[in-house]
Amino acid sequence: MTTSREIRLAARPRGMPQPSDFELAEVELPEPGEGEVLIRNAFVSVDPYMRGRMNDVKSYVPPFQLGEPLTGGAVGQVVASKNPQWPEGTWVVHNLGWREAAVSDGSGLLPVDPSLAPVSTALGVLGMPGLTAYVGLLDIGRPQEGETVFVSGAAGAVGSAAGQIAKLKGCRVIGSAGTQDKVAWVRELGFDEVFDYHETDTREALREGIDVYFDNVGGSTLEAAIGAMRTRGRVVACGAISQYNATELPPGPRNLFLVVTRRLRIEGFIVSDHYDRFPDFLADMGGWVREGKVRYRETIVEGIENTPAAFIGLLQGDNIGKMLVKVGPEP
Ligand code: NDP
Image (cartoon, rainbow, N blue to C red; front, side, top):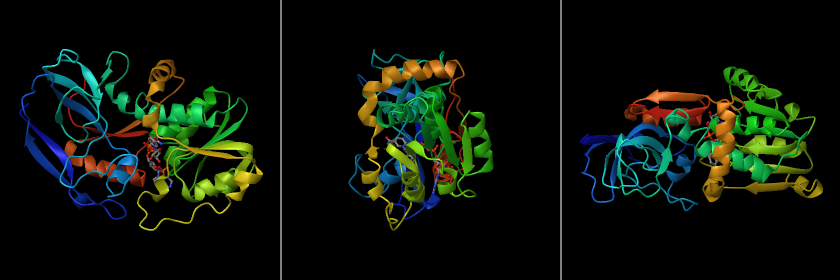
């Protein structure tokens, strides 16, 4: 491999990103220097948080720079190595993002064992989104057996995992998703109740009350969930995808005084603060996936040139399970 194609940010999106906000470029690959490796990617990940990094605002991660390739999760194989820790042939997860191949100095690489699970899962159920579901539900939401847990974005990478973990912990689980196909799949996963939020009023669907809300979407769904909370209920503030493309922020939940009267806890978290939980997560989740207790799906788009379309599709709800782009050979 002597060249690689990559996707760069050409313009900062206003509202929903457009294909013209991205550009495809081809670059010469340098020979890896001392301590470096050349990685050929099999899959690159498109993730909702990347939308926030496209804005020029201060946040928990710095913004993407115009004209630069977009960094983010990817999984690939070391095809040339001058770093003994990462010999040729090793599969790794890294954060160099939307490119067919990349040279890395070895920092930030995590090993992937292709004999245990398809390597794509290292970007989904056994990777960052899976850890988000695990930490968010178990450490932040702390559901007790018999409690009712509501998960929005239930057909997505994080939501589908969070709901299944809640079932394994003996909870009653309600999910919401955006199409009938998604609703049918989430029901197959064992959620007790699932509804399409375009067709069913969320307040109506939650009328019997909930103890934990795993929030992936924010907005009116969050307000409805707060309204349905039982005393000492917990909101796991994981994401707010309903407002990632908003040019004007919507008014916040109007019913926040219920936090006082019902002694609620609303707690946000960022998964990258919780990588100390990765070994526990991998042991538990790896076992659950192997035993078929946690199931997953992936929506796979082909070709690095289609990464912007996959990303826009993710924000529009085209995916069931984890949205990925296949850019090179798998093991
Ligand atoms: P998903 O796989 O869930 O994909 C995004 C989904 O969001 C779409 O498929 C779509 O499904 C849904 N969606 C889009 N617009 C809306 C809307 N207006 N209202 C309701 N749903 C909408 O993505 P992930 O699983 O990767 O991420 C889920 C959430 O978790 C995101 O908010 C993300 O930012 C957050 N997250 C947070 C992390 C953290 O550290 N706190 C780490 C990782 C993710 P549908 O058809 O059902 O609408």
